Image (cartoon, rainbow, N blue to C red):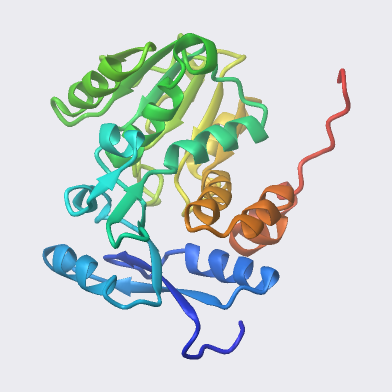
Length: 303
C-alpha cells in the first residue's frame, strides 16, 4: 500500500462488527494497481451512533465515500438527501457519496452484483422461475434486480420464502408493485419447480446449521447460488454440486459490484481496469478450497 499523507483520499466502510469485511483489501488492491492516492479503512460504529457518525464523517473533506456494511444498510436510507430507485424499493443502501453541492446520496449495487455473477457463471435467470430463500436486506436487493425488466430481461416469476411471519409478504409486495415480474410468497422452502434457487439466509455460517432447502428436490437443470461469503463452499453448495448441479458461492457477487463502486465514486479508469480483469481481486478473497475456480474455462463460440 502506498504511503498515507495529507492529500490521501479516504473511503470508509462502517459496520458492527467489521472484523470480517473483505472490501478494504479489495479496494486498496485496486487503488494500488491503478496508482490512486486513496485508502479504504473499516470503522466499527454502533447502530445507535450511526446517524450522527454518518453526517459528521462527511464533514472531513478528504472523506470521498463509504460502502455501508451490516447492520447499517437500512439505517442509511432515511439519513440521505437522495438515493437510487433500487435502494428505495429494497429499503437499503450499500454505498454513499457526497455530491458537488454537499448533499449525501446513496445507492444499492447488490443487485448488479448478483446479475453479474449469474451471467459470469452462465446461470440463466431471465424468463425463469426463481426461489429466493430469505427476505432480509440482501434478499430484497437480489429480488429487485432479478425482477427488473419483467419476463424479458429479468426473471419471469420470483418467490420469497422466509420463516419469519409476514417478512416475505412485505418484500414481495414492494417488488411486485414496482416491476412487471410476478413476485409472490412461497409457502415453504421446497425448491422443486424452480429453475434457480438463491440462498440469501445466514444458514450455512455455523457447522450445525440445517440446509436452507432440500437440494434433492431441485430439478436436474436447476442451478443454485449461495450469497454467503464465509464458510464457502457451504454445505448447501457442496450438496448441490454432489448432485451434479451448477452451484456457486457468493464471492462473485461481491467482485461484480467493484466496477460499479468505482464508477459511483468517479473512478472510471479504475472501474474499467476491474471490468477487464478482476482475477487479482478474486485471488485476495477466494479461499484455498476454491482457488482453482478463480479462472473460468474459455468458452468457445458455439460450444
